[in-house]
Image (cartoon, one colour):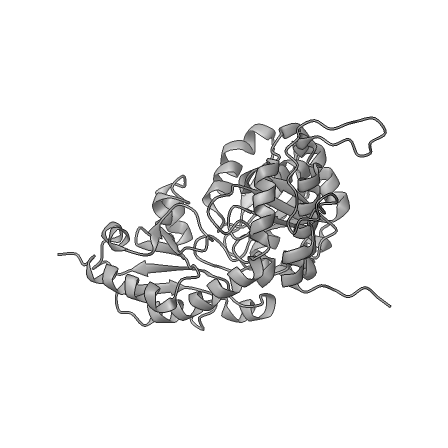
Length: 385
């Protein structure tokens, strides 16, 4: 009899737990030791080797959720992204990078790739033909982010994976916005999945972490570089992250339910010029979202009309927090032009469609009617005189 495949909520709750053999506690014990016995021990445990008990076991939860062979945890999303890129790329290599990506990722590429002797090309758009036109003989990596930050644009993952395999190129995706509850890129042919675990995995705005899931062979490669760069996650944070991930599935689905209803409300509001949400029929990638995603996620963006001042709007909010990060149980809003994409030039932001009126909305688990009321009163109080 074959082993039963566990459901997502069961994986979230049970997979990757560390057993308490002494007291049989219901939650994983936390191992804070930075020094372990080495005699007759294999592997030899050390925090910077990503293999302490808490690190090792929680990596299994990440891998199980993404249908991967293995996983590895980092101290931040950027630690994870930089480790993946610098593992796969060396001097003389070339990478094809999706144009619409998180500002921090783009800044890392533009600020550091040249010093490593790594060439790169940003795509003109998100079509597979645009990616194909960027491929060179020395291309070793195609990097995507879907849904993208902050405009929720989608890339056809199956098409990109097929294209990459034709050219023997490794693919990597930032799956932070979707989470494995909404989208499983490895099942569509992508090679490596990356998360800013600070976001939905953590879910309570109190943990900084990153995660990568892939084949065992690729994770071993990443580990070889990561252990020297020292971007491991502290075991206390690992323990907190495991606690948070137990509710990942139910949190994401509750947030997604709110987001879909609020997106429709915003789309019908005259004070809003445009709403970016894959769950709306008006979204350019709505049909693709229905194919490669199980739902549409809890992130959306919208543009205020010029009759409303964005700062006044955010200051007028009483429940929703103007806050830098995203994906906590509480709803938050930011201005991408002044935060996540502030490091980009004004010309680059304009080219990506990121206007000064654009607001990114991370929808939380609050009551939908309370969130809508808060938006309505903030709109009323932010009209330009």
